[in-house]
Amino acid sequence: LLSDFCKILDIDPDEFEEVEGDADTLAGLLLEIKGEFPKLKEKIVFSHYTFEVMEMDERRISKVKVIL
Image 1: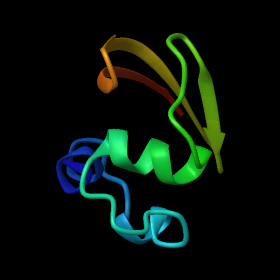
Image 2: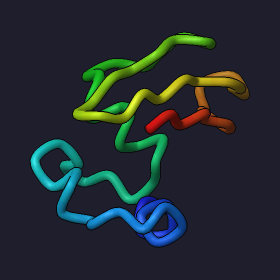
Image 3: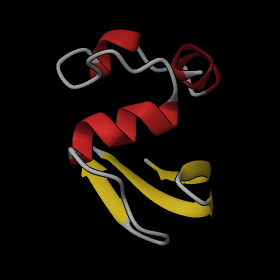
């Protein structure tokens, strides 16, 4: 969940407010930021965060690497 992600990294949830749309999960947030389904190993940059899609199951993002 996106709320859990923010708690774990001690991030203000409002940080993603402008792009989160209806996203409840980190994977959903990446879809909102990119506007389309990302590819495996693709890096998505937002603000001072870099998200890299590490694992996918068909059309589901299952593992994301986050670089601050």
